Image 1 (cartoon, rainbow, N blue to C red):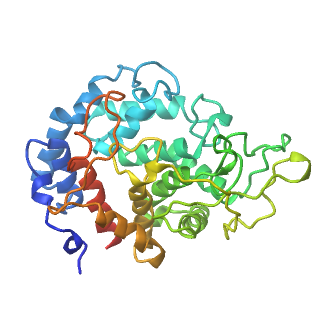
Image 2 (image 1 turned 90 degrees about the vertical axis):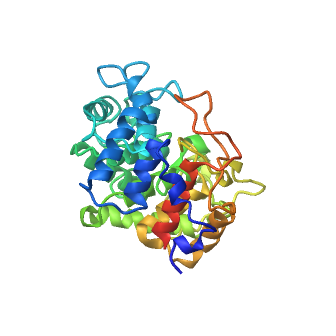
Image 3 (image 1 turned 90 degrees about the horizontal axis):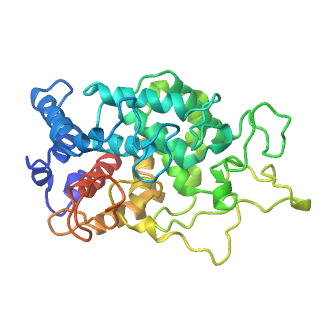
Length: 361
């Protein structure tokens, strides 16, 4: 059975309707399989940049390459530079197709990237999070950024997963160490009570997936293997991800007592995953859902891993009789434009779901 045969009906013609130029372009590129340089694809890309949501977001950009106010661009949510870049990447914007996109990529690298490769909310190394690191790496990769500084950001992300070359957060004599927020390997986050954050894990792993295999360093490959085990050792459909070991005696945080490759961490009692895991929406900003988790794993080659089967079944169960998926959460009124009414069949969410099934199939 092909990936499309798992869908109740073929919704691709619906996605290709001309009144949705942004979706149409991505459907032609990702689902219809038109080759790069195809005249129809080129025309669709141009139209998406001039009449679709891409044009709306770019119209709000300042000439220097930022949105709302200069600087690292994390606030205000969800209209400043960081969020504009994430959204543009998911909309299919291209630095080759529009010079403004290239200008914005350069601005982010100049103002939000620290010396060791950390994307930060405040420009300082300690202001980095896995979700921010993954989101901006994903955005720049999607936008076609070729700046060598992005290579350093990818290596930093891999190093934080494996722990190679990074000292503990309390080792203030070390040249390179974890910090209060990015506090340990395997996606531990100070903003998440120093627990491994699966939301951040998915963002990082998706960025690794978008890097061509031939350009994955041994360090990145080790990070992929450890990260995949972390995400798959718990059923992604349940999102009941584990927590790290407790603090060492005396209250000093320690991550040395558990092998990161095993992810054999105890589960926090009475904790419940965020309900957002099971709500598929568009765009996908700081939070993560089962669909994005499945996308990262499928694109990394784990689509046939039996541990992903329940998540893929969950994805399929959300479609309607026409093979369309509803919008279950959105950022209505908080970002530049609306992407459709909630609880109704949605082209952007359907596009996301079909891409996951294709990658897994």
